[in-house]
Length: 236
Picture 1 (spheres, rainbow, N blue to C red):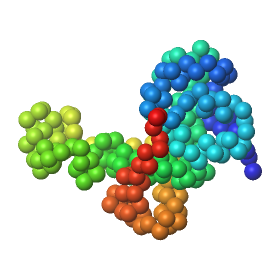
Picture 2: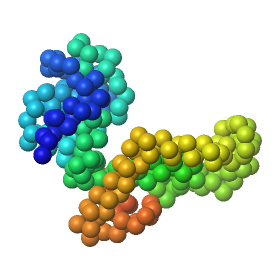
Picture 3: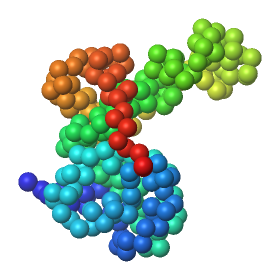
């Protein structure tokens, strides 16, 4: 079986992201995620550079690789031209490919991302689909948002949006030929296959946890991964 480091080296993001880490810590100093989470991009770069299979497997199964916000601040500061954000992206992809993401709390949340941002992008052409953002899953939106959802057309007409309309304008209906093109892009780039893998492996974990995974955002397992927070992730 091909080892983990060799598989990482086939990912252009890893190739471009890791030159030669000198352990200076500049990336950690600039990293917004490191200010809040138990996260240190310097350690990520050092870990992958050591090429230790056991360490890599532990990393792929951990919460750690899911803390990065991919802001790429690290790229702007590294004196050696490393980009820990790209290394993280490669690690996440490998974790999903091997099914390791289901072994961590933050990794399991990939199902929530897939069934919201992912599915919305393909089905509606919007990564943020307003009809999907209800106060059942986003209570912080408050009662005003409930009112807006009951009065979409009136509200968005008043601010100049073309809500669900044909032609140009904010919140317009995305034409079917455009949606077909988006779907082809997902198919060709491997995103569709990745989505299927996330669903399949999440179903496996749901079965282990004796939870119903369903097919939407109301299932027991979806709500579990969406709402669970062990509070172990933050800097003390």
